[in-house]
Image 1 (cartoon, rainbow over the protein chains, first blue to last red):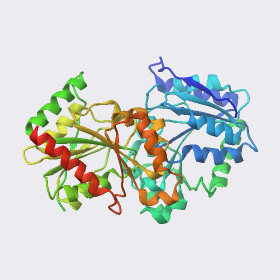
Image 2 (image 1 turned 45 degrees about the vertical axis):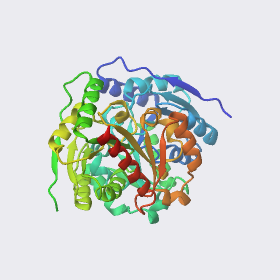
Image 3 (image 1 turned 30 degrees about the vertical axis):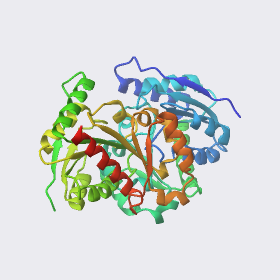
Image 4 (image 1 turned 60 degrees about the vertical axis):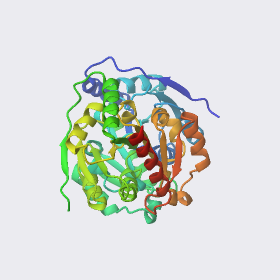
Length: 224
Length: 224
């Protein structure tokens, strides 16, 4: 099995996170690297979704991934093993979110010369990660069917912030009281420009559409 | 439908949360009121579980509930309507957790003269709520089957802190790769004294055991 490095992050010394995030975004654009901040509740399926997406996407582009967790390195090891992509583990030292400084530390360790797109798997949490700009070009989230279609009403900021929302575990729709129409309405209520893709990371449903979405985004950053 | 008050909480002015939490715990004990802090991920089934438990428990004891959310009052309205118990909504103003000061504000609004047990439904989040002592006599959490049996490895503090862990949505075990034995091992690894009860809040499985657990706790606080 591929060795996976674990980086223990220290808190950013910069007070002005937003400026630092803008600077990081610009730097990455110059390098031609597209950064995606992936957020969700614990257990919504971030890792499984990313594995499915990266397996396809890495046929076309060089992919890197940073797995942030409070503890453990189960995700980084799993992704590296299953996709063969460049992967590091970030430990947040108990912190509930990542900011631009912490993201920069991770990217520096990962190395940017041989990647076209980097996924940052944020800490599983619908509250705090939404409050900090990581410097990503795209904020996305994964909401899973078992969590319920009312989540956009209860966690406003993350749904306002995310441009892409994947509805995962749609294979379990028959077992839960969850309406795709209702959740789309609730998401649109928070951000009417959100793009919603229903998927089953486990069965592969919808993954092609997600891969096409990222291919367009990477092409855009490379040509602009 | 019963009217439900919404309280917008302000941040505690007390620096020393732990001392304030200890003082609140003692005060509640003197009043004979048992306070339970209920934590989980978004969508793990806190509200549905509490409704099932309160319906039974309120045959024996006077129950109050405080529903904390960043926004919306869907939970407080639902619980009040379905159980008839005393219920208020707490808005955290974007904050990801409750501390002892905020809990005290909520209890003051709820009123303590006509309750034996109060459930505090904390913000759906496995990280931040675990870091703040609310003054509760019992910290409990609900982990649901769709979230995965590895969660105690990834969110250490909340599992260390909780004396009672309910494993919810066990009716969906056939559809997820989740082992009850493995999750019990992982919970015990974080806190070997944790008491684990598998339940299905939807179907009512395991609820009697949870109710008996709380009956014993209330009797203890009333007689000691």
